[in-house]
Image 1 (cartoon, rainbow, N blue to C red):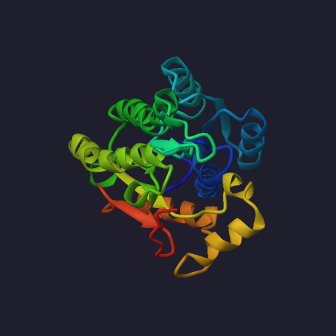
Image 2: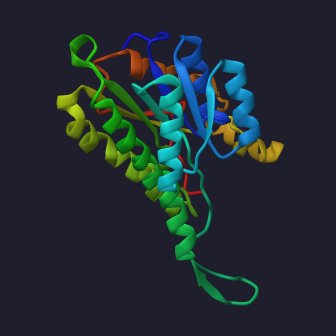
Length: 260
C-alpha cells in the first residue's frame, strides 16, 4: 500500500509508547491519523504535533469504540489502516503461598478477565469494526482495501512467572492473525501481528536503573532495549509490502525470556 495523504489510519494506544511511534511514522508519510487513547493530555499533544486527531476511546467499551470510529471517519474518511497498540498487563502467580503467614491465594479472576478484555477482546473489537468499514472501500492495486496490524508480545510464546493473564491475552492476539487474515482475504484486507520484546516505553521507564541494565544485558544483540521507532518501522514495512500477510513477527533482539 502506498502511504500518502489519500490514506486514513487509526492507531489505538496512540498517545504514548509504541502506538505514538506508529502514529508519528504514518503521519510522516502524509497519512491522516486518528489516535484512540484514554490519556487526553498526551493524546491531544501528539495529535497536534502530527497534524492528526485525538479520540478519547476505551477499547473495552462498545459505545466508546463506536464513537471513536465515527469521530475519526467524520474527520478523515474511512480508515484503510488500523494499528492496535492499546494494552496493559499485571503480574501475579496463578496460586501462591505467603512465606510469612502460610496463607494461600489465587490470581483474582476479575483481574485476569480485565487483562483479557483490554488486550484481546479490545483488540478484536477494534479489528472487527475497522474491517467492516474497510469492506465498502474501493479496492486499490491488486484489490487491496486495508491493513490490520496487531501488537502481541514475546510473552505470547515465552511468558514469565506471574504473566498468566498477560501471556494468555497476547497469545490470543497471535492466534487471531491467521484466521482473521483468512476471513478477510477475499476482500483484500491483510492482517499481521508484531511480538515486541523488551522496549523502552513509558511502562519500562518506571523500573529501577539496576533492573533496566539487567534486562538490557539479557538481550543477545543489540544489548539494549528496543526503541519505539523500530517497532514503527516494522509496522510500516508490513503495511507497505502487499505480500506481507498472516504473519506473526518477533521484534526482540533475539531474546527468549527466562522464567523470571
